[in-house]
Image (cartoon, rainbow, N blue to C red; front, side, top):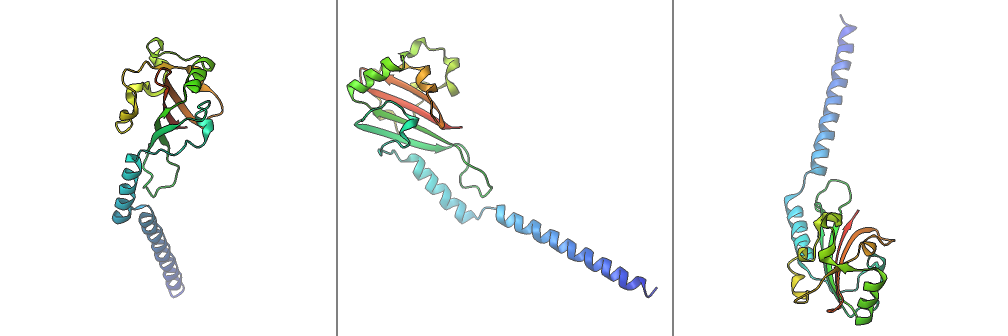
Length: 184
């Protein structure tokens, strides 16, 4: 019996140590993944402010919106498709929308080069996410020209290279391009 007791103590001791290690790992995991309410609240506030902001800086990278030329004006916003404030690992996809005021010659060139057609003639099932010019976010709506006659080009949407899905609508008369981009 005396030889069994040290063995039993060793087995129980090892089991207790293993149990403490597992419980410690689980607790550390919860602390790592669990959001600190103050930190999450601050992050959420910053995200709301960033999403509400209408930006006017030039679009970069320009390859996402080819053929715009030296446009005089742009207004755009971004929105997170997921939760960038989560502590879980993984990328966050982003959606972007904007209204670009073009030079008249660039609007005409775009319409011709990419074969823009009247929006009314487009098969709406071909547009990603059921996009339309009316889907522009509310803060960008004031930059849309009144009485627009929108055109659409499937070839513009599919032009390479693009790191994002693209949908664009063009009004040649008002020299305005509306764009919607989504990370893929």
